[in-house]
Length: 318
Image 1 (cartoon, rainbow, N blue to C red):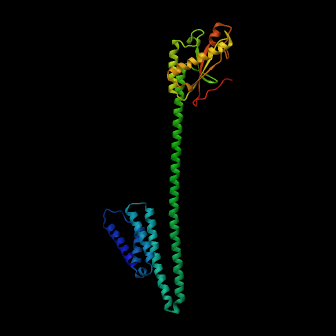
Image 2 (cartoon, rainbow, N blue to C red):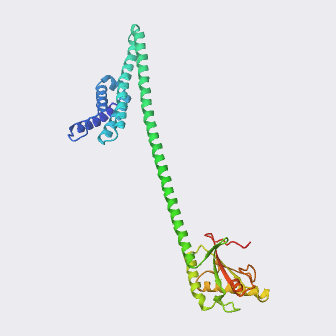
Image 3 (cartoon, one colour):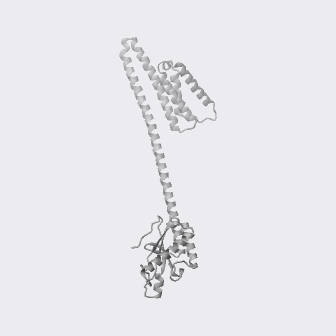
């Protein structure tokens, strides 16, 4: 144990000599100087070296730690904390040595017994008091570390909340821009809002009389509609065919469905998947105008295209 203490002391002495020789080193710290003086005083006491080597080693460890922190320019509070611990351990070492010496003197004579016992109790009480002070200092440092960790965790939580809020705002802005762009494109297709959603109405001028095939005049409309559906792959459409009341009801039902299917086929020919296009024929049902006039019947002969919502859902008719 003595050899180990001698080696540790040489290391500490070398570190102190090196620091003293550095002209550019940091200014001395008062508490560090006090701790160094207390350690040297205890180290030079043969009684301490013989009877309290463990306590002296603890003082040395804290002094080396304080010196290291000071040279690395760490927080003053940490330097002084370890300097304080070193000074207290040096005092404990001296008191422990004296206690050991006192205990030895018990055997030297009955006359001194009571006085020595009182001294022993006093030294024990003082050592316990200093140990309690050390525990309080360590507890204070642990509490400070816990508070710092809690503060950093709170900062990280606030940063995460801010980041999430910014992302939500960005998504909302992008969604708003997307909706605005969608409305503009639908306006170009001459879609109109209804209680079922946005609807495009194709009049009977796109079909020859009593025929289901689209005439060439429908190509431009089909091209624009196909381009829209390619840009908005989340959308589906419902193509509904209607006729006026002229002719047999069964025939009108078939004609309305064939016209709706013609629109579907035209879009599929332009690269739109068939499962995105539903088709229904209603014949004479759901007229837009009276069938008693030529103009009214012309309005009723139509194909309507209803757009789904963003989830691809299409509303039915009530």
